[in-house]
Length: 303
Image (cartoon, rainbow, N blue to C red; front, side):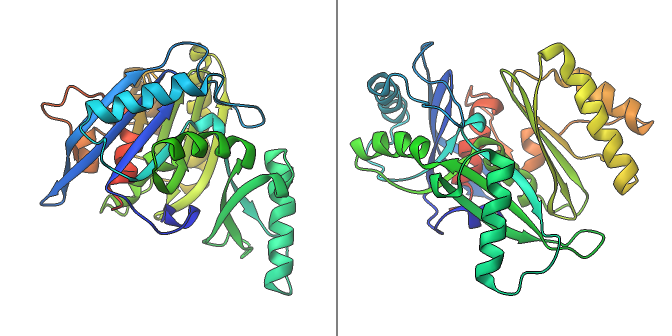
């Protein structure tokens, strides 16, 4: 469902970008399961990339380009010209916007949504690339939209580097939205939760009946993440009822055993966290971690 965020151009290869690492990947698909065809990851030195929404990201564009080129070369994808890209989660902002009343026209709706996006993201609409998709109405029947914004100045930094390689980048999404594609692809109709970890906290994306219901970006030290996750699970239990048994945790900054215990406490019964194989991705024999590969592979799976 996340293809609305840019033009529908789905390359078979993707890069994933984080503050400490860049990765390149292409996939094979057989019998509904994806496996890694080609992939490589290269670490980024401190001070090369600092993902931020309002400020410059690439502090050393030349070193970033060098590492990106090395990852692509190691993966055997140097000749690939069409790519998707997963940006760091902190480089973009995502939310769900609700309209208090139905606008009189499409133009009025766009103006209201731009205004609400400005309030939610803290930047003028004219300075952002904003993408939105209508989702199911709330309980009161009010229109809702899943919205992502990236500042033009920030996305231009990345696209300028991509252009050095002669790439055509048809799909550019923030990391949590890229990772959530694995849950959207799942055939199960149950509700699901993505917890995408990062150095300064995590992003939670709750899918209810296959559509985003809650988006939260939480900034907190690692020792407070458990309390925040417990509050989120209790909110789900109170709001939607039942047990949320599809939880996908991605990122080395989130302690999976602790989250499984927290979920069991919130719901009163054991909860198992999803593995890559549960969402249709095989990492067998690759030596690649799911945290490294999940976002770019989620985009490559769209091709």
